[in-house]
Image 1 (tube, one colour):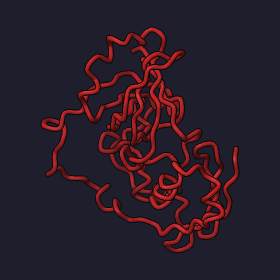
Image 2 (cartoon, helix red, strand yellow):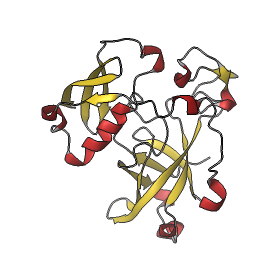
Image 3 (cartoon, one colour):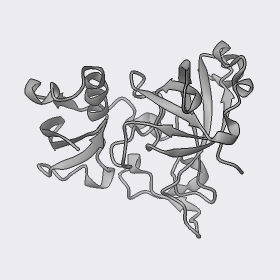
Length: 224
């Protein structure tokens, strides 16, 4: 397996990354190909597709052993289910799969053709192994069942983001920050730590917040 590209996102650490692709549809990322794969011919016709599949590596979840069961955060971090019934990064092979929207193709002087995509759920610098078109007629299944993930999907927090703090973020990052916080970025095992201050890196800033009940309150925004 060869790394063909790396993606550059606003997430320097695992904490705070969207739990699934597409949640932050307003946030753009850049895919830069490795020198060996920068031939413009390899991207000929890609603009015909609105969405792409990315096959990538959980580069910070590589381990020698594996467990047949894992504890999904969305089940509180206590209930075990089969690893192949989850999207846990702790797998026999640390492979991830994400669907992203292709925003545009850019020609650059130093990096060749790069892809600008939106909706990525990956760490900055994540290695990519392959890119494939998303086919609506074959890949979309409106009647599919969501398993245990459906039970928690849609449970949002109310976000109290004071204007003086929100204005510290670039204007094009503010909506994404609020959306991300509403999804509750805390680890599920810490979700009951009312009043605890959590912090994560986003777009070159450190955002700190507390949660009490169903309200998340941002307490500071500092540039990294």
